Length: 359
Image 1 (cartoon, rainbow, N blue to C red):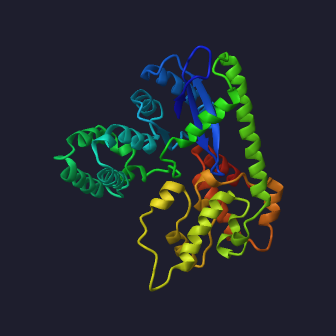
Image 2 (image 1 turned 180 degrees about the vertical axis):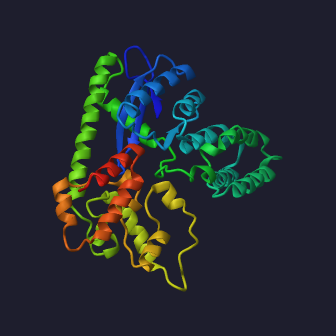
Image 3 (image 1 turned 90 degrees about the vertical axis):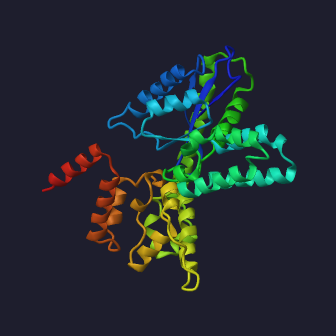
């Protein structure tokens, strides 16, 4: 989420909120005209979003796992209050852009490249200890010769848990550690508006048209993924139960992990599993797939985060499919277990009620 400007005749900032769909496509979630960019106004806007999008249904829609934004402290503080269970990510692109603007002039070209690489390594540190080691190395190397650059980087340290890999990779961020998606949405929106002097009601009408196009594209992609299978996935028994249940984008990513597992040898085995891939993407990693393969089991839709799951076929089609001799009672029970484990408490109660009411 991020504010964009020059969208309306009154000069009000427009808080643009986008999401990532199961096809890895960006879609418009909502927008709010802001009177000002103060924390109070952000709290009001985010609470309205929470009430009208996430809590307007029964049962309520789960809050987003991750919210990405730039270092606007008013927005960040408001988001932490309103979306208390969501992890806040500060856009790395903005961090690097600001570091470039504030620090590059202090260095020669060659030393700047070394400094920037060291800072990137620090941000990408896989563990807290590694992050500390990398930061101490930066300080030892540049504190004497470039104290102003170190002082600038230190302004980012209070927010390290919002952009350093050691912390953010504990969350399902889908690889989206920048706000580039919402920046792209800003451009798309302004191309549709064409001018910056429209009345807010006119802006809303055009944004609604844009949202309708997003929805049409989603429906088209959904139909495509439910009818067209990836040949290489079809050829692999370990993936066949995923066809038309998991988006083709996620299947392509999983296929890469399957090939990684297939290519591993005794001489060149898989590296140790850190769980980072599955935690951040919601897609099974090569290590998990190998454990299934070794146990003569196969990938199931429940092994993928709900982010990547397609709507299942109509009830009659599903019943006919499960009645096929290829599937046994064990598979049906496993499917029910998967549905139960990924359902919220209201859906679990409904499922149990249906089971107990069976004759």
